[in-house]
Amino acid sequence: MDRFIIDGGVPLCGTVRVSGSKNAALPILIATLLTDDPCVVENCPTGLRDIRTTVRLLESLGKKVTVEGASVRVESTGSLKTQAPYDIVKQMRASVLAAGPLLARFGLVRVPIPGGCAIGLRPIDIHLKGFEAMGARRIADQGDIIMSAARLKAGPLKLRFPSVGATENLMMAAAAVPGRTVIRNAAREPEITDLGAFLTKLGAKVSGAGTANVTIEGKAKLSGARHRVMDDRIEAGTFLIATAATRGKVRVAGAHAEHLEAVLVALRRAGAKVRVGRGWIEIEMRARPKPTAIKTAPHPGFPTDLQAPWTALMTLAPGFSKVREAVFENRFMHAAELGRMGAQIAVSGGAAVVAGVEQLSGAPIMASDLRAGAALLIAGLAAKGRTVLQRVYHVDRGYEAVERKLAGLGARVERAR
Image (tube, rainbow, N blue to C red; front, side, top):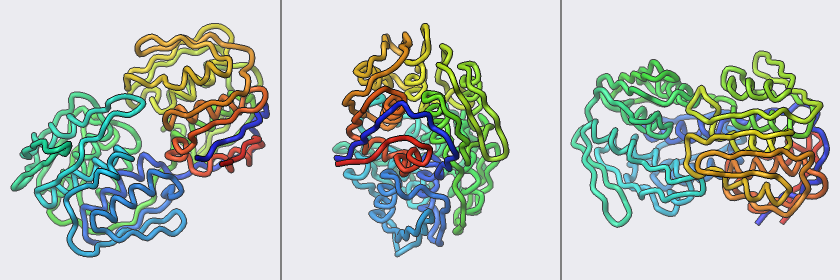
C-alpha cells in the first residue's frame, strides 16, 4: 500500500487549483442511469478512487463509460440491469444512489445493504422510507433490499433529517416520475444544487435545490445532457486549513466563499487573514491559531467533512478548544493518531476538547478514513521532523493528486510504496 512521507515545518505558499467536487460528481454520474441518451460530465475528478468505483458501477449495470481527462461520457449499450453488485457497494456507500433511478425507471431494484464504516453507521432508512412514501414496497433478502413498485407516484415527502444521500436519491427518482414531488426538510448542500441543475438539463424541472424544500416536476422520458461539475469545496477548505496550520499564504483557485461561510468565519476567529474574490479565496496565517470552538451541522453550518482537519489545526492553538461533532456519531478516529504526534485531545461522546501544544512531532501514523487522513496529512505538514502516513488509499478517495498539489506549494511530501 502507498504511504506519504512528509518532512514538515514548511509554510505553504503560492496558488493551488482544486478539482471538481467528488460529492457532486458521484450522484451526477449515477443520475445518467435516468436516460438512454448520451451524457457528458465535465470537471470530474477522474483520478479519485470513488470516481473509478462509480465508473465500474455504471458499467456493471450496462452503461458504456469513456473517460478522457476530466471528462466522462456515459452511453447506453442496451437494457440496464437492476441489481447493484455487492463487491462495488461494499467499497463505496454512494452506490446505493443507483436505487432511485433504477426503481423509477423499471419498478424494481435490488441493492446490498451498505455496512457500517469508520465514521458511523449512516443508515439508509431515510432513503427507503422516502421510496415507500412514493408507493414502493420493500423486502430484505440475504443482505439485500429489494424495492418494487408498479409505478412510483409523485407527491409530498418529508425527511426526518436533512440527509444528503436521501435527498439526492429521492430527487433522482422523482425526476423520472411524472407529476410534482416536493421534498421537505431536504439537505441544503451546494452539491444538491448542482444535482438539481443536472436533472433540469435532463428534462425534469427542479426548483428550490439548495433550500429546505425542493420541488421536482418529473417526466417519464429524460434526455441526455452535458454538465460541468462544481468545484470541490471540501478540498478547498482542506487547503485553507492546511495553510493556517503551516503558517503560510495561499490562494485557492476554485474556492467559493458562499460555499464555505462557516469555515471562513472560524478561520478569521482563529486569527487568519482571509480575502475572497470571484472563484478564489486567499488565506494568510503568520502566528499560532487562536483557540476556536466549532460544531458541525448540515449546510450552511460547519461541514462535518472538515471537522477532522479543523481538529488538527486546533492541536496547535494555545489553550483549550472544543470540537463538537453533531452529524456522525463516531468521527474522532483521528484523535488517537494525532496523539502519537504529541497532540492532547480528550474525546467524550460527540465532542473533543483539544489542549493545544506549541509544536507537533513527526511520527509513523495511519489513516482510518478519508477525512481523518486529511487531518493527519495536515498535522504532518505542520509537524517538526518526518511523518510517515500509511493507508493513504483513504485520502485518495477524496483528494486528487494531493501530494503533487502540496508540493507545488512548497511542501516536502512524496508518495512511496
